[in-house]
Length: 219
Length: 201
Image 1 (cartoon, chains in turn red, orange):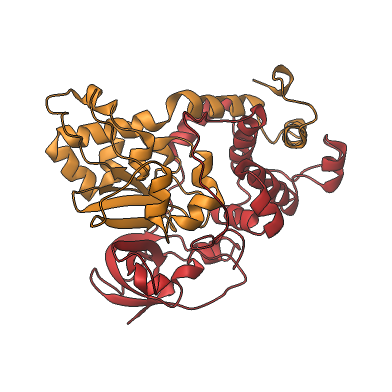
Image 2 (image 1 turned 45 degrees about the vertical axis):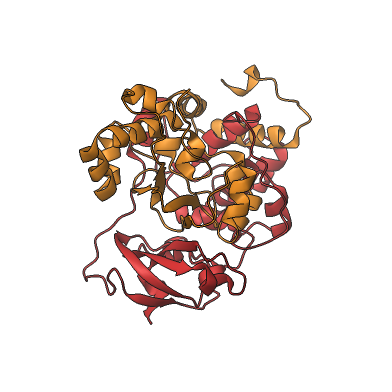
């Protein structure tokens, strides 16, 4: 979706302001927010693509004014409600009022090290070979889906060159909506800055994205 | 530790909001608060940019490891014990005298946790995410890094599940240093591309 998350090339957000010796957390609640979010993911009701889509579906005015952990928590509330774990009445009361659906799993403290060390690989085999190879010229699709996608606006409808065939991976555009993993080949596609930004583009700059096969056509 | 041990400002709306959510989920048996403690401890004390610095120092010291890292970064990095969440599919990109690499996620905050830990606030925020792909030189200036005008810049937008680790160039004057001493020269920012490795003192 053309949501607030799609930031490449946007202007007006001000300086980057890196913080010297930045701490990992700026408040105690950020620690709990990280942990609650990861533990809730272990309930097994949604995947990483659905959680990303919940974040980018926040209202732009909220998305742009919230810290990233606040974005996580707001999206997490949406996911927990959508999947029947919590209710508005629970949130209003600040304690458990309604019952919950049964989760697929609950992450216990003793399991955390192994779960974090394992992660969630999302490479999947596909039955056919890649359509493109390194060096091929490709054009990215120009589309504006209302659902989740990982092709940023700034590289839609652009000519690029396949640099690397990276393997086959879960397709987020369907997986986010529980329409199946539908794995596809993923390619690193490189664009000259002038192709993206036109007049005045930095002549020394190239930008790459990692693009699923259905985002690409032969140029 | 659990929420009755910390000292948040009770008026902070986000502190109250997160505490309420944790309370509800705990009361329903959906989360184990002790698991949150372990997660936080992991990313405060175990998984951070020291991991990535060890990878880079080994690549500088051992050409065969550098070659492995170039061909199969996930396996090469796993051989040092660094695996897992947000590092499942790693790629290492090497700076050269001609080309400087910079990593961003314009669409969210994708970052190689297994080697760099949790991302800094600026990496997740709109100013960096919006500008890195259109004005990387301006971005680097804000980090105090001015590249020669002829240096090529390659920006990697992490739009899929591949996670990128920049291998900065080995600094001048670091000949003969041990891997451990070399790792001390490798900053977090140098592995994102917003900095260079430090020169030895």
